[in-house]
Amino acid sequence: MWESGHVAIEWSRQEVLRAVRTCLLRAGAVTDGYSAVDVMAEPDSMLVIFRWRRDPNMYAIKVEFPTAPESSWTGLPVTSAVEWAADVAARLAEELATGLVRRSRRMIRDGYIVLDTHDAPDVCPAGFFISSVPLDDVVLSPVPPPRGFRKRAYFTFSLGSPSTSVSPPASEAGSWLAEAGMDVAIPRQLIVEAKLACWLQARIDNARGRPFIGHAAASWEDKQHTTVRLDLVHIQPGVPSEVRDALVRLTVCEAAEAGALHVVTAIDDPELHRLGFRPVNGGGLTLHTSSAEPPSDPTTGA
Image (cartoon, rainbow, N blue to C red):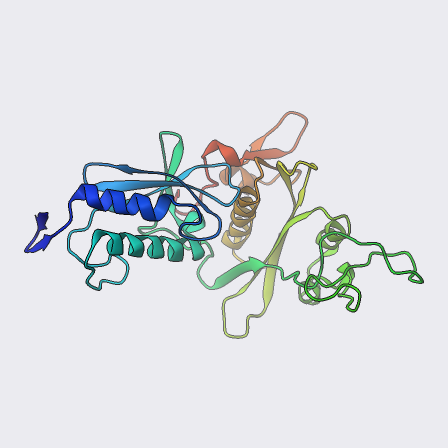
């Protein structure tokens, strides 16, 4: 037992640490994509170390020891260290689901990245929204066409019976971007070649979800899926450059979370240098996702 302020906490710090370790280190803990590494005690807090999806980096977040017998997530009373630790796991699950790794400020420490959401900038510039281009009805690997079909790119629905349903061909993917005046030939070709790594779109953040004002596409450079190539970044005239930067930063995040160790590009733009890309011999730029050096936000230095 120890006291914090005027409220006595009935559990020792050792009990709290044990409960947190039990909750966060077990198989299947927290949420899909989370893989626990360790929970370490520090003088006034615990450090939860984990991996996220297939990202080559190791991440950590600081969890303060309780100062009252109440949940740090809901603020409601809790009756045991186990109950308190369960709410720590629930809060972490919510944070990861809402982009903890992507939106946090970062500090390199002992080979892992400590994440801090305090005053962290939004992943999207104010007034804009970035998301993946929906491809639910397009399988990213071509399948043989049925007998009698002319030879062409042919795709089945990703859901439902392939024998009874035919999805829109790659030539229709991102049609709303094309209607907005953007060139979607590159990502459509990457779909046909089964090389598309990610395709992001930017739009005005309003109730209509329109207009679309930019997009970015990247492809797998190798069969081992260790390198992603940034093939395209585009914003419409008059759109702030911060939107273009955000498209690049989120493309890098997508690549890292898919297991890529490098992002390369032939796009030689000074803005990419500010985002962490560096020249390589033979031309082009590269960024190492496994270096624990995230692409920086030029407006904040984060």
